[in-house]
Amino acid sequence: MTKQNVVPVEAVAAITVAAVAGSSPLFPYPPPRAYGRRKYLSQLELGGGRIGSWVESMKASSPTHAKATAAPPSGDAAVDEQSAWVVRHPSALNKFEQIMSASKGKQIVMFMDYDGTLSPIVDDPDSAFMSDAMREAVRDVARYFPTAIVSGRCLEKVINFVRLADLYYAGSHGMDIKGPTRPRHAKARAKPVLFQPASEFLPMIDAVHKALLERTKSTPGARVENNKFCVSVHFRCVDEKSWSSLFEQVRCVLKEYPKLRLTQGRKVLEIRPTIKWDKGKALEFLLESLGFANCKNVMPVYIGDDRTDEDAFKVLRDRGQGFGILVSKFPKETNAAYSLQEPSEASAHGPLLGTLSYLLCDVKDFLVRLVEWKKACSKVQVA
Ligand SMILES: O=P(O)(O)OC[C@H]1O[C@H](O[C@H]2O[C@H](CO)[C@@H](O)[C@H](O)[C@H]2O)[C@H](O)[C@@H](O)[C@@H]1O
Image 1 (spheres, rainbow, N blue to C red):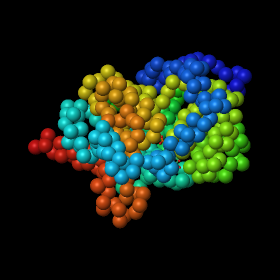
Image 2 (tube, rainbow, N blue to C red):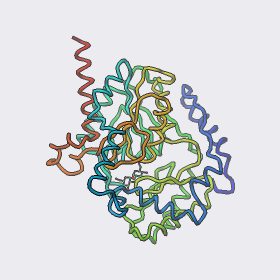
Image 3 (cartoon, rainbow, N blue to C red):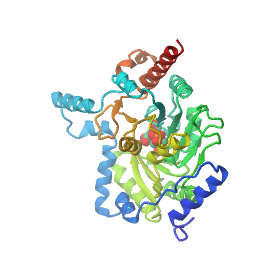
Image 4 (cartoon, rainbow, N blue to C red):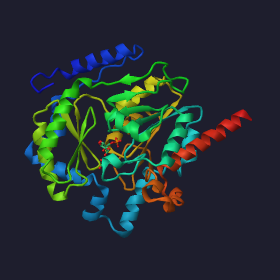
């Protein structure tokens, strides 16, 4: 699809949903609506004067960078800031009992982001492997609770990293959803879940991927990743002095694609269709697929580290149902109720630190504790 023959997004979405629903008639779902042009422009900020604010935001996307350069609060002030944040977003491990007592009589449904949540952030996106211990923890969680992985990566990549059946996967920021062939949990629909609300954008994404590869090839360290329904332009390995020129290169390419929008993650610019679909919508779709639409007795828990996960945290906050857990070592504005610090200290730094990992409140420990709690509850019920 070229810029000249763009089909209105509403029509695209309706056609796509109809096509997907055709293969799975149990899956009627309202088609996603497009972001208005005004919203698109404000997000892309094509006006030259705003480039500075994007670059500032690119810098701010690295909390370690912010700490190193932006006159961080020192000594007591830093401790105060951190403690005030932890009071607002306490550790999900420290508040474990409180969380579990709120879940009494409710079905917990687990949603987890991949990069920075299940795997440590590394320079090479192709090497963001999760540890075997983390895989084991996720496998156990999925035995006891309906579980979904929601990622900005394309579906194929995230499945290859996680390598677990029996899970729901939502790739490309929720624009590519696939459920297990035989769902384990009782309420889940019997038919396989497949949902691609942006499939008409595939040719456009391919074209913009090629254009971005070409345009950014002169910037050392820049890396363009095709995530099927979206494209990532990584600047983690780009010299900071080149960030504004890289942003300018991306902006120039995107001028030709008004149906695509730009967002930002951790040292990455993400280009995606303007349809109103994000990780929050994916979470709602998955809850419905699992049979929990309009259900009061469900407690969705979403664990994520990135700005794009905020859409899911916000959905939970707005529904007043379940809660988000932000994975971050630094205070950040968030809609999550709780926090954890790291995916898994053991996986990032080797076995020595693993023995201390409980001190660091990591995601793996939370998952292990959740499973232990569930097993203990089951024993009590049997007795
Ligand atoms: O939603 P997610 O699963 O968190 O995906 C978001 C992006 O994750 C990946 O990039 C991030 O992790 C890389 C590996 O650790 C790191 O090098 C990069 O700086 C991070 O932004 C992935 O490569 C992107 O395509 C995703 O958009």
